[in-house]
Image 1 (cartoon, rainbow, N blue to C red):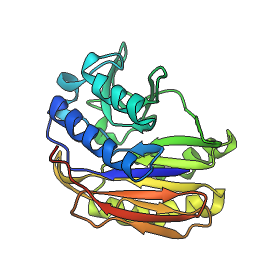
Image 2: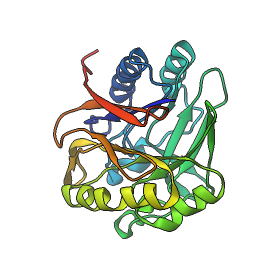
Image 3: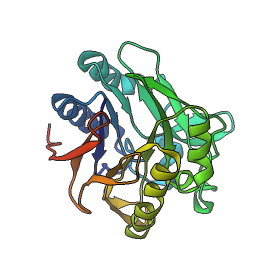
Length: 246
C-alpha cells in the first residue's frame, strides 16, 4: 500500500483557498501512486483555534465537494483537517473522503489545555480498512500518549496515521516517541506536520514515516512544503517536492 503525508502551509482561515490547494496536492499524490493521503491538523483552516468557531463546517458541506470529487476521480482516500461543529461544541476534526463512499470523520479525543477554551473532545475511535490494512487516525497531542496507539493496536490497527501541527520542540519529542510506538506495537507510523505560521507558533515540518521496527524511513525538512510517499510493502519511503500553485 502507498500512503502519502502532505506537508503544507495552510492559508489562515481561508477554507475555499485551502480546498483548492488540497485538491492540487491530492492530484500530485495520486500521480505518484498514493492510495491514502493525510494532511496536517486543521489543514483546511490552518491551526488557528481562535478562528475555529467561525470557520467550522459540517461534514456534509458542499464547500467540501471538490475534495470528494477528487477522491472519486482519482480513486484515493484522503484525510484532511477541519473544525467540525457538534451540539456540544467545536471538535478538531479529521474528515475522511473515500472514493464513491459516504464521508467519515474522526475527532481528536485528548485535547491540550490551551485548546479547551475553543474545542470539545471527540468520543469515538475509528479504523479505516484500506487495501488489506487497518489504519488508525490520531491527531497531534493525543498521539503522544502510548495508550492511544495501544488502544488502536488492540482493535487491530497495523498503521498509525498521525496528523499534527507541531513546533520544533514538539517535532523533537515526536521523533523520540513515534519510533517507540512503531517498535513496541509493531505498527507503521506516518506523520504529517504543517509548515509556516500557525496560531502563535511556526509549524516545524519534519513530516516522517517509521517502519514497524521503529526505523525512520524518510522525512521532510523543517521549512518546505512537500510529499512523503510510504510504501508499506517495501518498508520504504521517499520524498517529493510539491507545487501548490494550481
